[in-house]
Every structure is written in C-alpha cells, then in structure tokens.
Image 1 (tube, each protein chain N blue to C red):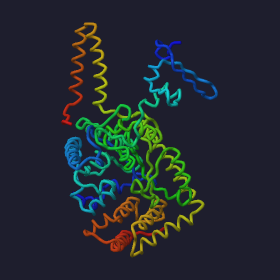
Image 2 (cartoon, rainbow over the protein chains, first blue to last red; image 1 turned 90 degrees about the horizontal axis):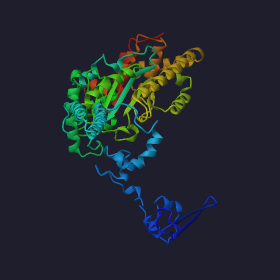
Image 3 (cartoon, rainbow over the protein chains, first blue to last red; image 1 turned 90 degrees about the vertical axis):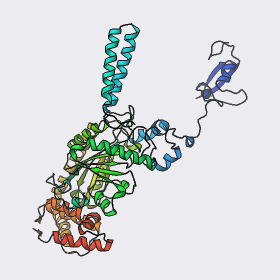
Image 4 (cartoon, each protein chain N blue to C red; image 1 turned 60 degrees about the vertical axis):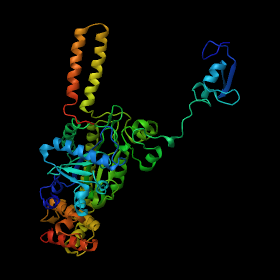
Length: 164
Length: 353
C-alpha cells in the first residue's frame, strides 16, 4: 500500500482514531510521518497530524511574548494600557485584535473614506499590470502611453508632501 | 489669545440656541488620524512627540490658513486657561495633563479644534449648535482632505485609519449630539430610552464627555462602531436616532404639562427660587438648577430670559470661566460664593409667570 500523503513510498505507519464513534484511518510512509512531526513513541491525534499541529510542529509561543517589531510594544503592555503603540501593531497583534474588533464594531472591513493618495496607488497598480502585459506582447506604443499615465499619477499623488 | 477674549465673547456657538425647543444643544464630529511610521503619542518618547507637533502644526497652518487658527501648546497654558478650554469643549481632560508637544489649534469661531498628540496624533473636531451633523462633517472632511495631501496618514485598506485605541479604527469618526432631556426625566422615562439606545449601538455620556455623569439632564449620544460602516451611514444613523429621541422628549414635555404640571412647575419654581437667592452654590448644584430654569424658559414660565442666556450662565458658572472672569484663582469655597453672586446678578430682573 502506498503512502496516502506522498503517494510514492510504501506506507509503514498506520494511524487510527475514533472520531464521533467513526474510525478514521490513515496510512503513511515513515518520511511523511516524520515530516509532519509525528513520533511513533508519543500519542498524537489524527487531526493534529493532518493539520500540521503534531508535537514537533510549529508550536505557537505564548501570546504574552509577542513584541511589535516597529515600536517594541509587548502584548502585556497592550493588556495594561488598552492602547496600541504604533500603526504596525495592527499587523503584529492582528490575531489578538480580531475577536475584539468583531465584538466592538459593525463590521471587520473599512467601508469609509480612503485618502486620495491611496486611491491613486490602486490606480497605479492597475496601470502597471497593464503595462507589464503590453510589454509582454511587445506592444511598445501602448506600453509608452501607460508609462506616461503612471508617471502623471505618481506626480499627482504627492504634490507637496513633506519627507516622512 | 485669547483665553481672556474667549470667556467674554457673546457670539459663540456655545450660547446659540439653534433648536427653538432647546432639546438638541449641539452636534459634534471628531476624526482620529495618525501619521504613518510614528508611534502613537502615548507610546512615543518626548522628542518624537515634539517632532510630530512641529510637523502637524506646519501642515495645519497651511490647511487652515483661511481660518487663521490659534495654536496653544499645553505647557504654556495655566490651569485656569486649561479649565476654560475644557469647559468650552475645545480640549479634553486627557490632553490637559500632557506636556511638550501636545496642544490644540482652534479656529476663531471655535467651530474647529484640532488636538495634536492627544491619544492620537490628530483629533479633528467640528462642532455647531443644533442638529447639524452633515454640515459639521462637511467642514471637517474638507479640512481632513487638505491635511492628507500634506501628511501621510497611517491607513490600511482593510482596517481604514489606524488609531491608538482599536475602538476608533476604521473611519476614526465619533459623531455626537448633545441633548437636553428634562421632560423624559420628569416623566421618569429616561431609563427605557437609554436602554433602547444601547440596543441600537448608540452610546450615552454626560455633559463633559467620556466617563462623565449626565447632570443637568444633559447627555451626549454618539455612535459606538467606527469600522464596517461609511461616514455617511454613521452620520445618518445617529441623526435619525437623535430625531427620534427629540420626538420622545417633545412628547414627554407635552404630557408633563398635561398630567404632571405641578411637578414641572415645582421643579422650575424651586430652581428659580434657589438660583435667585442663594449665596453659596456648588458647581454641580448650579448646573442642575439651571437645567430646571432652562425648562422654565422653554415652557414660557420664566420671563426675561432666553435659552441662550441660560447657556451663557451655565458656561460662566463653571470653575474655569468663573475664575477667568474674576481675574484670579479662587479656592472652591470662594468659587461657590462667587458663582451664587454672579447668578443672582444675572437673574436680578428675571420673573416667573
């Protein structure tokens, strides 16, 4: 019997687990078992194995150890102050914030005003894509026209922006 | 400035009575904005806060050039000055205790106040008398658009404008309407209305903002959610709720005059009697009694006084204004006497029908 994961090697490891009184079985090779963090000697669950949550898999560090790389705010600082340290904290603590945002607000996606500069950057991205395609099909006339549009928009995006 | 001029002015929106029934006092819109690549003010070291103050002050000077704003940095203000600004809703209690790099830009009509380095780098506030959220938003939105061309805001496609507190993320918009709800209170109907508002996702606060009590029967209602809805939807929703609450209040006042006239007349008469003759008045007591007097003006029981006059007395009887007018700092006991004297004088020619 072939390994059910790699479909190449001979299956030598047999998982069996009762889930809601139904037996689930999986036959895998030793390499796949090792790759997914399964140790023959230690008990583990099929779910953990299949979803990469085996004993040797990536174990999440306790939440309290997380620190924002941009401003140095730690999870425990946020718990204490209820205020974030900088805009990057929204990425750093995305997981922790998600349930909070869902519970507090009407939605989870911004549906309001967008700064004009952001709108322009989206337009520029679309033009760039069209430009790449034009170059790929060697339509250089079209490409030049698109390039000029991108330049015009880039100029308009930051008329008198001060250095950040 | 300026602070000395502020307390003397009689043309402020604070004294205006846009709503003839006196139910809706004012409409306020606040936008929270932050700069990309900078720590939020509460987490930033002082030198960074001072740099942000300079950058934002320059950008605001340009963006508000037509308004001729006055910039006030916290360390240069005395305690009484700060009290006056708080009482006029131009600064918050939070920013009043900040040091270098925190301050406010105020337009001469006091309709716009931009706090710099409060909880966020910028807090743009627009305020006007009556129920007028759309017009106030329009003014603040235009200022915000002029500013975004000069300052790079912290913004994410998914979460919108990024703010120090996740309760403000998204639009960064907090709209609020200040209302005078004496009728509902005297009809003992304020509780169910407040509970209903809570279910609609509308927050209720006291006269002086977050964490303050609703004294003087004055409360502020504001939107709770800032993420997942557009600014227009938030403003429309709150305007509708404010109209509905004002409708309940009007209805309560009608029934009050029909069914509980003695109770209303008693409230007004007692307020008038104490305010007209007291020699020691605490701040909180004065505001509660002035709310009763205000009701008397609205019911045309009090003669020789307008709602605007009551608004003025309410403002002048607060500690900061009182001390500023008298030109010297006063201990609380002395303030209570000065307050009573000022009110006696203001009401000397006012009568009851």
